[in-house]
Length: 436
Image (cartoon, rainbow, N blue to C red):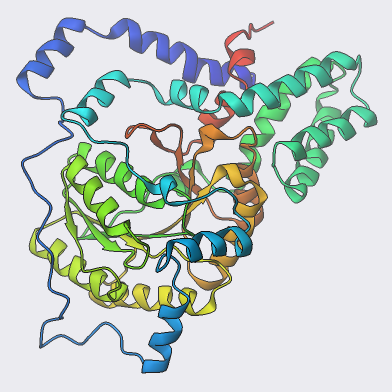
């Protein structure tokens, strides 16, 4: 069976069957009975937890005064202007500010309305979210195919340029072109039109490599107790927003979720996470601005355990990847988690802004060197025409992309699926495909 037919059967025909099989009367009755999970609850955000640790507990970390000053002096977010200047000049991210992590005004029933408006399949979300990348990538592929009557060396040279322009990454492109040439020869393909299908197939092969889809997709969970997710990343990438969306998603799956506001340095970060907690209906453990992030996480773990929570999501201070003291502080936070919950954190998720392209690759490389990043969250994938960065990160850093942001709504955070991703890139070609 051809690869396009497999994708069409999985994402197009399956979607049609699902739509035909829906019974409006049953759905309406389910909503009336309250069987549809609500995004709101009567649960309120927890009161502020005392900064002081229990007397019989060892403080999560101790530092010499000089070391403390070194951390505080370079913390992004203590001064709004300094933070913006550092992020632009040292991290190389232009135009980012606190608005990237801000929350749209929450109104009564907003989350529920979004859920009702967004009863979409995974395929339709990837198709819509990758519109910019598809319009750029597919049009270039079509133009290339239209100019050639046969597949030759010049064809592959131009294809190489198209892939690089989509931010697939030079190393990944070289590997892919080599495999494409071998496959074209093996199948004795002469028609450039047929190469499009082979390209889509190789994109999936390169992403998964020798691993099964189940090994790289989805978030790890602790079957024996509290699951802890630690979020890291520089300021302005959408970290707080992503945490809020993930909390909503986990809660809609029936999990008891709590948050820890460990970004104590950036102005407004605690309030933003607290607002997300209110909006989604989950508890937030917080301290005052400027407090010790490790102490917040410590109290967050204690609070999560006392409430019988299933998942604790820990925010951390946004940091520049070239600030050694701040990166070392991240290791201390991680040690507190490991001490209090054996085997945790179960995921260390690095949030990257997909619109920054190769600068996101640079951040990923640096974070991977200083902490055990287990997965990438690509925010704003819908806002870039260079979605190939997904493949570059996976192939060159060997870190899977766990989640992707495909829109601004609270329901637009999806588990990354390479097949759905490729469907999003070649949607029109796949939908129009007819087997010969």
